[in-house]
Image 1 (spheres, rainbow, N blue to C red):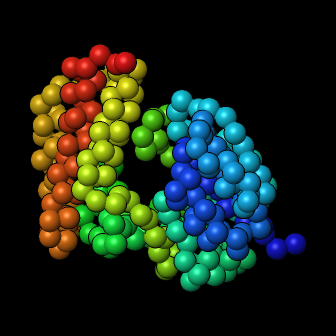
Image 2: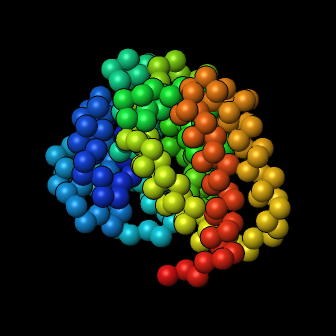
Length: 252
């Protein structure tokens, strides 16, 4: 029997974007959707596409994503988010890799969009991604602790990066970018409170400048004009704001 492919999507209240995401995943042998405390129409949309639905409530990102991985029956898993789109070319390449790869996991390049603007450069520092560990054999990827960008535990041998990119609809506009920064830093602050933050504020001030340099210069964010500058600023602010929220605010 040829290797089988499961497409996994983990969502929380994504009715506006979920249908288009799942429509692009029909090439997989099965579609698995994890619904985390959804109160909108996500469940109804998932039922139109999914072969398997898991519903529940998870405080940490790792819990819901690891639950989804366990629910997949395929030999290989393609994990995408509701704001990501698989093109026809990428779908065909994934099927070819699944059928022939002797490796355990493959990176997928990512094209990041803000509104209709394709922003290729400058991503990093926990504020965007240039590639993702999205295609892997079952058992080759697990998630660790953390509310935002939890640590990945990878096993097996990594193969060549795929050629065709995954389309990532990151934000609609600058206001969305600001709201995302606020959400991420609030969640990260909670992690810091629970883990105990050993670093002084001056460490995060230094990290603010080094991240800006890394995104704007090393990752060539300057080539994106104002968008690259915004991404670099938000990447630098992410750890600093998280630290200050953990230190100064009282959790609700």
